[in-house]
Structures are given as structure tokens and as C-alpha cells.
Amino acid sequence: MATAARYSPKLFPLRQRTGTAAHHLSKRAVDFGQEDLTALSEKEAVLLLAKLRWGSDEEMPCPHCGTMDSHYWTAKELRWKCKGCGKRFSATSGSVLADHKLPVAKILKMVYSWATSSSGTPSLELRREWKVSYRAVFTLMHKLREGLLRAHNVGFLCGVQELDGMDANGRRYREKRNKPQGGGGAPKPAMPAHLLKPKVDAQTGEILGPPKPPKWDKKSRQPADRRIVLVVRQRSVSKGRGGVGTRIAVAFGETAQTVMTLAKRFISAESTIMSDEDSSYHEFSKHFAKHESVPHSKTFSLPGGISNNLAESFNARIRRLLEGVYLNVSNKYLADYAAEAAWREDVRKLSTGKRLAHLLGTVLWTGLSNWWRGYAHGEHREEELLVEGNTPAKPRGRKKGWKAKPPK
Image (cartoon, rainbow, N blue to C red; front, top):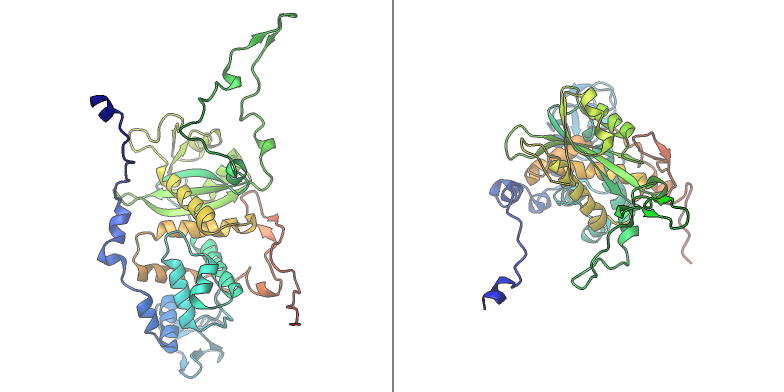
């Protein structure tokens, strides 16, 4: 009996509840919901959007001339007339949401559904929920991502920064798809050939060394569509707060040149950087105040708070986003999706109302969309945004000048 009890199977240990989970279960996490949006009329929705954009629905700057005043309000048109230049404007004029055709109340509901999810919401799901065309939802969501990439993924971070890189596209699914991942009956793995002792040729007496290690010439064997998502996360000075600022970039590889370009773009010189033991990070100690590395082959962290677990947690979130929510993400827009994941990490402890206000307050200040105006008519972004420099990307959408075929 003692032997049977000793080798009885054990339950899988559940993860302990984190501070983020405690926030989501508290009352302060939900201060605004779909019910509040449903109760809004179109006029109230326009005024709410004006408050989120300008901080007021009475005084605002004119998008055309910049005049700050309490402009003339036209309730019938739901627009204002500038007291300086006399031009009319709406709550979305001069923003990424300009020239919209959907009612503002419906746009707010769709944006709220997208903003309050933990790992994103697919466009097909939003299309089914709100009975709009897939093209309209897809374009709206990408306008939000563009605003986050241009307005949220900017600025220097100062303090303790954690940096890491993650493979995205062209690697995991090629290695693991349609292949068994082992199990209880799997044979015992053999010793890798490159770790065996050298052999001696019986005829010539020549010492034959072991074959090349698995990672030798790894770059030449990588798929052409493989990309690296690089992330910088600022560690909060308050205990238990986690990361408070996230910056991302996409690169061909995790080389010394790319990580240094990323670091100089987002990290101040007086900061401390935490990373793993990858050789591409060794030059950080010459350019920044301090650099600490964690040997992940031995441990997850070292005494004294030396770890890059916050960067690893971002990798887990974006992997779930790319492989579990948004399927078949192209490299052309990988930076846009990474910016969305970075924003979700930064606002994870904001209430629903503050999260919506943060999103629209950030996105609406970026100006007109550079990449999604005229998308339905073939006006597509032609470049992939990379650390090494923008690279021409193969388009996947409708070609320029596309027109719908008349029904038969």
C-alpha cells in the first residue's frame, strides 16, 4: 500500500492567482460597459468621442486651422463650425477615423469590444456581433493598430529595462505541424552526435571530429519568412506593479546591430538593462549604465532581482495573440499586431472605461491614417516595417484599381 501511494499520479499544480487576476475580479475593474454604450444616442456618442479626443465637448482646437475656442455647434449635422476659419468639422475630422460611414455609436461599441479583450478580438467575430462587412471591421481595427504603432510605441524609457526577442512566423508551425510531440511511450533520446568523442580512422590514424552542432549554420537554414519580435519592457519602481512601459520592433534577426538600434531608439543611457545570455547583448555595458544577463540554460532568474521575466511574459501574450486569436498574420503587418500586444500589456490593469479612453485618446491624436485610407480601392502599404529598414512587402489584399464584378 505504501508503494502504491508513493507512485500514485499527482494533480497538475494550478498557477497561483496573480495581482492582475485580483484586479480583474475587483469592482474597480469594470466601470463602463456595453450597456452604457447602448443607452447613448448618436448625439451623445459624438459628444463622448469629442471628450475622449479633446477632453471637452465645448472647447476644442479646430482640425483645419488649430483655433482653440468654443466653436459653433450644429445639432442637426452633429458638427462644429470653426470661429476662426469658418470650416466645419466633426469629432473624427483629421484623425484615423475620418471619413467613416458607420454611426459613431456603433463604432464606439465595436472599439469597446476590441479594447476590453485580453488578447484581441478577430475581425470575423466582430463582424458577426455587429452585422457589418468584414472589410469595414478589418480596416477599422487596423486603423487602431496604426494609431498605437505611431503614437503609443514611441518615446524613451528610463529605469530598469528588460529586453528579449521572440521568433514569429516561419518557425514553430513548420517544425511542429503534423509531428507527434512525444508522450509516455516515447523512446529514450540518444546522445547527440556532436557530443560524442572523436573517432580515429583505423587505416590512416586520422582523428575524425564530431559533426557540426545543431545550431551551426543555423541562419542559412532559417525560413525566408522568419521574423524576430524585439521587446523592451520597463520595470516599475513599485513592488508588484510589473511592467509599466512596453516598446516593440520587428527585425530579420536578433543580431548585435538590431538590438543596439532598438535600445538606442527607446532606452535612455542612464538605464539598467536585463537580458538573457545571448551574445548579441554583450555590447550594452559600453553604452548604458549597467547590463545584467540571466543564463536561461541554468535558471530563470538570479538573486538581486536579475531577470527578464517581464519581457518573457510579453512573448507569451503575443504568441497567444498570433497563434490563438489572429491567425495567418503576415509579416507586412506584424509590427502593427506587436504594437497592439504592447498596448494590451500596458493597460492590463486599467478599468474598462479608462482603457477605452486611453485607446481613443491615443489613436485620435495621430492624425489622418497613412496606411488605411483607400485600402478598399487598392491603396495598400507597400513596405514591411523593420529595424534594419523598411523592406518592400508582397501585397496580400485586393490589387489597386479593384472593382466588384456585377452580379450575373
